[in-house]
Image 1: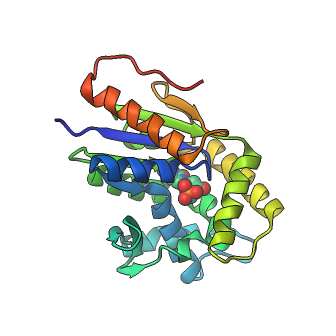
Image 2: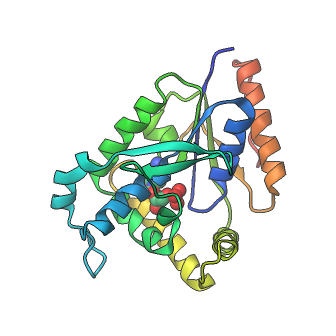
Amino acid sequence: MKKITIAIDGHSSCGKSTMAKDLAREVGYIYIDSGAMYRCCTLFAMEQGLVNADGTIQADVLERRMQEIQVSFRLNPETGRPDAYLNGKNVEKLIRTMEVSSHVSPVAALPFVRAAMTAQQQAMGREGGIVMDGRDIGTAVFPDAELKIFVTASDEIRAQRRYDELVAKGETCDFQQILENLRERDHIDSTRSVAPLRQAEDALVLDNSHMTIPEQKQWLLERFKERTLSPASPLQGKE
Ligand code: DC
């Protein structure tokens, strides 16, 4: 059976990575978290002192040093999911901190950062058999993807999920701060000039505000089966 390309886009913390990872594992596809790649660029900028005290980025220096950023993914046998590596170092935990979250959107808005990451993402998906999640996968990275999903949920529900995730990891955090960070990121991601977050015209919309993880998983698996078993049949989105 031909392996297809699956693009899953949506707002911050809407659970798309969980869905995407689970589907990839279930059907034996590669999973790529494109947000992790932008987070790695941000971590690099922070570690190299290229983020100013006021949060602005020293873009000219970062642009000159982009070729020093090598992002890769390796399967973590304990979690069964891929961890992100920056220049050979496992940074999976480091890139998920609030500090990285609060600087990532301006870094991801820089055109030269997007150009570099998009090229790497397209190379990773050249053979198909990939599930990639992000903001511009169905619109800019894989506009010809056979299956495109756009996931969303209410701001409060997304903030609560993120809060629970951080608390489970033992991080101290503030719900209000998370909500504000999430809204700010959505705003920057949706209004930037290059590849803004938007729903592809041919994407199926999933509002998972009131769905459990197993329900979402099932919904996605059904869409996958429809697409791979009878590619010509129309797909039905959840209203
Ligand atoms: O999915 P995430 O929250 O880990 O993404 C981190 C940031 O990266 C987010 O603010 C938007 C940006 N991003 C992007 O611009 N394009 C993508 N394809 C994926 C993420």
